[in-house]
Amino acid sequence: MEKNKSNIKNTWSVLNKLIKKGNQNADIPTEFLTNDRTLINQPNEIVNQFNQYFTNIGPKLAKEIVNTNQVDALSKIPTTDKTIFIQATDENEIISVVKNCKTKTSADWNGLDMSVLKDIIECVVKPISYIFNLSLQSGVFPEKMKMAKVMPIHKAGDKHEFTHYRPISILSQFSKILEKIFHKRLFSYVDKQSILCEQQYGFRPNRTTTLALVDLVEKISNAIDNKQYAVGVFLDLTKAFDTVNHELLLQKLYRYGMRGVAFSWLQTYLKNRSQYVHINGTDSQLLTVTCGLPQGAVLGPFLFLMYINDLCFVSKTLNLILFADDTNMLSCGKNLETLIDIVEKQLFLLKKWFDSNKLTLNLNKTKCIVFGNRAIDVHRNVIINDTEIERVNEITFLGVLLQNKLSWKPHINHIKAKLCTSLAIISKVKELLHEKCIYFILFPGPSLHDLWSRSLGKHL
Image (cartoon, rainbow, N blue to C red):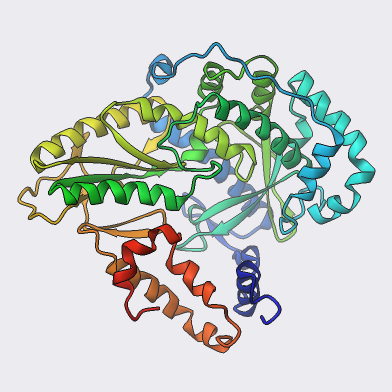
């Protein structure tokens, strides 16, 4: 602790070891219940059931969505006459990418650890450079790099049910390096052409959750200062990354200028991907992944941003704030009844867009909150597709608890309660803990400090 007191990341790593927060894979039970409530206890059966469940999540959700014409899904995307050019890589770039990779990541399905690759990269960079350039020039992503090793991680609920686990994918180290090189070229083109909408804060340089929150809070504060209401709808998407339609994604990328070799490369990158589940030494059969984006892949977040980018074009009157799939819509005005009418119309447009793009909007988990200091004399709720959107007084967005009167006391109390649960552990090492450990939990960013500092009081 003394050695790492100036490094917050390493400090928490030591704390996690103290409280034995380690490999959750070891805690997976030896018996599971299938969908028909049959008890299975054979390791081979369990891993194969896990793989079936994980690979079917996306296709199952997509089938439940009413089919719509894909032309509608593409109608808002302007077709550019610009086309991306994929520049070849070289040995220096590959060495630089490898040296900047994190060494904490697990060994891939080949057993190759990134720390080992860093040590030997100068010796093997020449053949790697040849293979990577062959891939970039021919527009073909190597088949051997498409396989993923999946580890189930328990989320919550009954540990004996497959639905209470999420997959963690371990990909080829070489795939990560090649993807980083390709991503650099893709993002440079997208940034130069200003393709990504301004409302998107996720997975972009110089864009953070803090900036997204500042944008949202500023809009709400301005409404309150002008004696207006601000009606916010916080959308819940079910397994958004898992249900991305490959064909539709490729059509969008083509319209944005990913043509020729780049298009072929992305096409082969998405096609015929496979995975197997590994639990305590037992591997499942290999299954093909037919939709969704590779979990844990370098290109996954970028491709998702491109997939939902035209959401911002659905309506000119929408105030959207996005952080990847975390989506909020805000409408401000003095007449609450009129605002609810507007929100219902806009939400209908969003629901139509999600359906046409094979994304599942969970209306039962979507929440509505009315911000303002004025008395709320309208108790009618937002209704869409005969589903009433629950109205709440508090909502968590990007890790911050927002209250309908924009008081920060609930957020401070929430953080205080979280810290108290770990107080017993922290007290044992309190003399060695740096104050920053607590500070950075309390505040997502210094730019938000002024907003809730008056509510902080004695809690720190």
